[in-house]
Length: 85
Image (cartoon, helix red, strand yellow):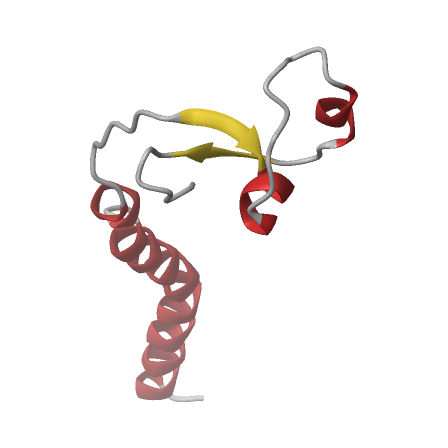
């Protein structure tokens, strides 16, 4: 091989070694600000209710000692206007 071909091969090999690092840095730079832009600081006031009661619009038990609470798997925050999270 002549010197020009060796030099080209050396450059290609060096670029090939740097490519994964550059790709990781680029991905980090693109994804890093995402959580900061995704959420705003908000406060909600409401009551915690069983998700099934809220979704089915049935009367939820009011007492924490009610057996229905033990069977409930998911809970939501029910706002006074009827929205839930």
